[in-house]
Length: 130
Image 1: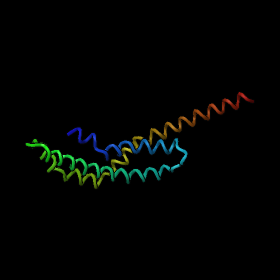
Image 2 (image 1 turned 90 degrees about the horizontal axis):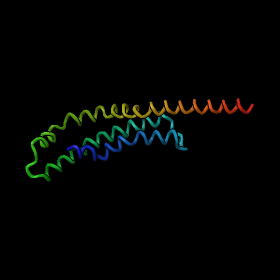
Image 3 (image 1 turned 180 degrees about the vertical axis):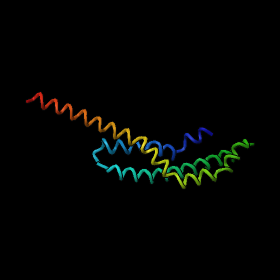
Image 4 (image 1 turned 60 degrees about the horizontal axis):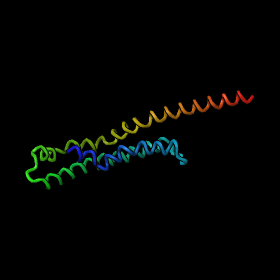
């Protein structure tokens, strides 16, 4: 069961997309406003959360169908899927916001530290040249 959760391509996309987008925003030549990036990821994150939930149950169904005498625990997990899907539909955007902020806030702090260090070096170079 753990392998199903770890190999979920929508979970992988949900996990990898924020750092890639933030790196593209801070390092890339294309300047993307933070608000646009945030809103784009909240929408994409909500979609990936819901697709990930559906993918999980689809893979669980296939696993049960392909396994003779599948454990009752798997069948119970497949039948008790309503709350996860409803919560994903209603609050998938909240997962996206929290996870994006986990990456975005440290990235902004590191960028500001980098700018302060670069400004201080530039200031020292100007003072030395005078």
